[in-house]
Length: 295
Image (tube, rainbow, N blue to C red; front, side, top):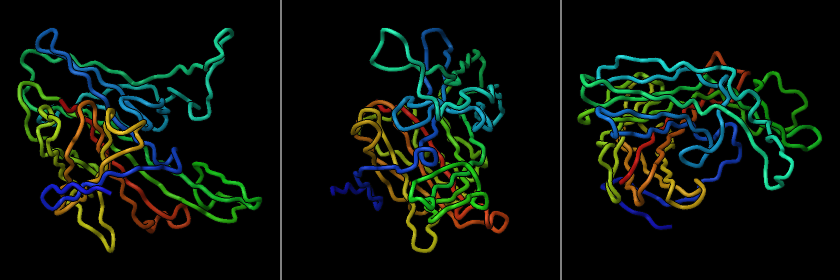
């Protein structure tokens, strides 16, 4: 395995395989910027899955908040239908006579447009979406079959072996600069990635740095763990499977981006169950993501 050293950050090229899509699929935002008409606008959409800029539809009942913040953290909410994409995880699509090659799913990508004003505050804007806390349990039943559901641990019946039981929450961000890039402010998420690099001017070969905050403090290794950020590029590897890893040191994670196009940086933390959740799950999870474009 080839290792590329960036200061004391080790970046490892790896194959990332996920066994349970419902629990570990990526939750991310995509921004398209347009300067065709001054002062410009952005198009925003929500992604779910693995492939950039969009893989699957996200069920609206999972979404907690969706908004944009200006450089001073003044907020505009994006309304959304909580009933959108209901049952999408189990929907295999609609068949059409005369088209044997596939089926079709209709869904909401939560696309929103922001039109900036001539006197809009200059600086970095944050588009943010958060998911509700989600329960996920997988187990082997008494017949040896693999099962999974959103039920808490104490509601699972007939389990021979519990493979995973977790309550987790995901936080997604994307950034756009009006006039100039300024250092983004923390929003107070349980787990937060804050770019220390101007994401409006990233080129192939650049090192991109992120401050990592957990419960408002720089993330530090706990016990024997050594947390890592992971990064995926739409033109890097194949199908969102191949990625890069960057170890987090003194609350900062770094990666060097080798290809152009859209990139997704993620971090997943697993913590022991808290007192109030004993019997409901075995772990508590936190996941944060940031998307940006490389020139």
